[in-house]
Image (cartoon, rainbow over all chains, first blue to last red; front, side):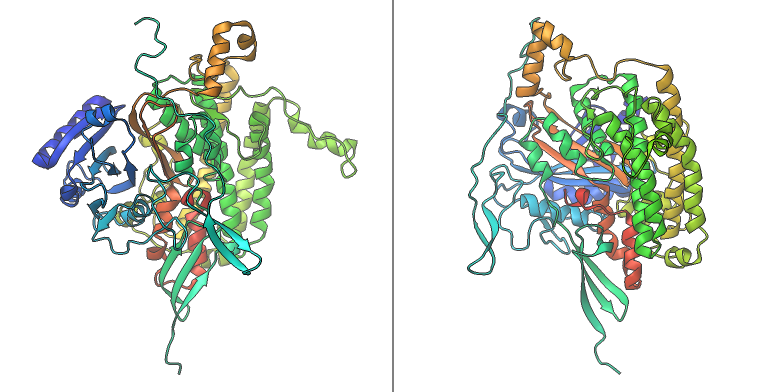
Length: 206
Length: 417
């Protein structure tokens, strides 16, 4: 029953979006579509207003940095040489279905995606968060400020090239009688190394 | 007459009604709020970034610290996302235990909410009442996981261990003599299930007590009725979920609409509000107390009758028993690999959501086949709710802002992450 519902949804997505739809895939019972950055506003409007889709709620919006994702994986997913993407999770309360939309930003140095705050007002803070943590700029956003990081913070902390220790630390300086920022004094350390095994690792049958 | 009436006021970050570290910049016209600009991030710990540098199991305790009043439900979403990518089957008994503790957590969360909300609005007694019951439920947490708050009890593939057969007991002290101690231990003689059963029998009467204090209370109604009204359409556009959405009259509950674990086998009702104001959201949550109690009762009945494993027997994901580990070479290797390298999750992405006491709590997990997540995004319900504070409080008085913060059930652990 689940698969037929997903197929129906995929079919109505194909009908509604036409050539704006770059690709569509189903995995783990979840539907993902890829859309071009310049189309996202028009696509979102259609997703919300089209009767067969009615995605009335934006559940989540987040940025992602694919720069160290792995070459073969990126190639499989068609985002080779594209570092930044915005992931939208949509939910239709009326029709009870979900959808994931992925938008890859064109430019790696200055990623830009159109804002969808006019369609789902909840996107306002989520876009501010993606801007803050990944430096993705949302055009036509009414109030694009940092949200989670400190006042006066420099850098985009969730990018893969940002160290987990950060660049500066804060302490109280007794001589100057104020709080000062200084370069971090702790060494980065990795307790458990990152390991990616080759396919079929430990599989005795093959 | 004064010329200028508009001014800006700073509320928090250290304010008892700010529920943690909310800094609000309020633009006021006299006492009327024109604009509210919440500044968040004062509790930002970059949990998502930390998780990218830890193995999957090492991040489980971080989930407890997100929404630190509903610990186990956070873990639930996280382990569900991992299980979805690994495609592992969770034993049915573990599913029932999870559901039972989810509902215990819901009661825990709502108890803190009603206590803090009433305290903000000016009713001191509720806080003391709510914490009396929280004590019993935290004892359940302790009995099952060893920790009263940050349990780390749910693991990928099941739960850490089965429910204990005995409850810890009070010892006589200078304050409580032998006889009093025996009375205090009366409901702790049996197993954990007996203790929870006893609690579910007592709890409906407690909820009646809360309602006697609040529901028809004139001051309570004056502070809540017609405050922060949100229409159903607006609630959906603003990304409301959970009691905030149901308070606006939308019948939406993941436990019923997209059931996970064993919720489709259980019998419970979904309360829905009518007007979408603070009072309706209060009524919705009060009814959720009773419905959660009902679910716990059903789980206890099932768990008493059906013993079985509580964690998957796939030892590539869950550790083997100590006895097996010491007697069997293969289990020894599994144990070693699991606790040094951790397990590997196949490449892919998934989104798992649970009906958190505050709304929809979701985990978006991207894996590239490593022993650590490539990207973990936590969808916190409070984040979307707090974003709507501006809209909800516009045109209300300053004191109503406090009531609206209370009704949103804000906890900064999850909003700032």
